[in-house]
Length: 317
Ligand code: TXA
Ligand code: MG
Image (cartoon, rainbow, N blue to C red):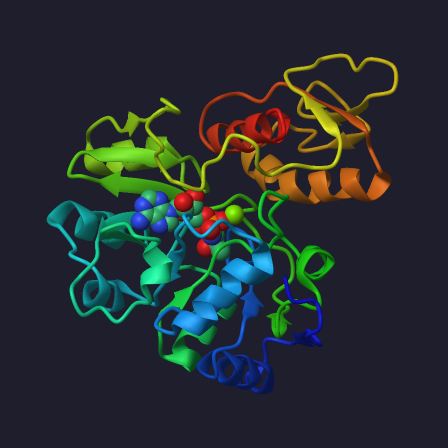
């Protein structure tokens, strides 16, 4: 990937937003905060800019990108929005829910965004800086998480710069991301099917739809093409569901299991999600070679946390 760009750090004030929007309109790459993680944004209609995202991240070109829009009206210009999709948008947008919908003919998206699929993944982020940026650019933004492919997602500007400085034009500083895990991805084909557990708990979706959500756990059916088994990988080896660390292991604690680092001492899953990627980045910075992680309950945001931890623990290619 290119390594020679001077990456600017912009404050999210009027001048910073203007500069970020000008860079994006010109085909540049700008990282920005969302409520989940930092995204690496590009004009979704500009093929050269979208190609730049894949190059900067070292991302395989078969892994499509999420398109960020300000609202339902903008989504309807890009995709066929069914009644169920509309209900979900009304209930959960703006927020950490991505919907995979049939792409509309003439939507004007670069085909690289969909990576050959007939569908597009859409989300309206809730973070005020992301919303200000979308308004300032006036165009949909393709934005994967702002990390080198296969590594831990960024929840601070420091994480973004550690991974992508020199490869992107700018990053907007919005402080730490409050949710801390990526959005929940739902396919509606037309039965609702969970493609990625994330910042919106499945229980909330099931309650809103008054029906159970199919959780696709069969790895043979590649659900979201980006859901490669080994992902979110810190440098060290990861062992899960540990209540007492072996000698030489650094323990990541939760609730009653107190560790060297702690996701949430009180056992709060929202706090643990917000701390997860920061802890993994810190373990990398410490040079941790063997990491043990306390058990996390498989409910609410725990489902997203466990998904990321299982991928972090998966054998590396
Ligand atoms: O919270 C988030 O979703 C963050 C912020 C920046 O919005 N973005 C994010 O993007 O996590 P990324 O690229 O790291 O993950 C996008 C996931 C990938 O697993 C990709 O395969 C899947 O979305 N995806 C994108 N388009 C798809 C489609 N048409 N069908 C199925 N999966 C799709
Ligand atoms: Mg990602």
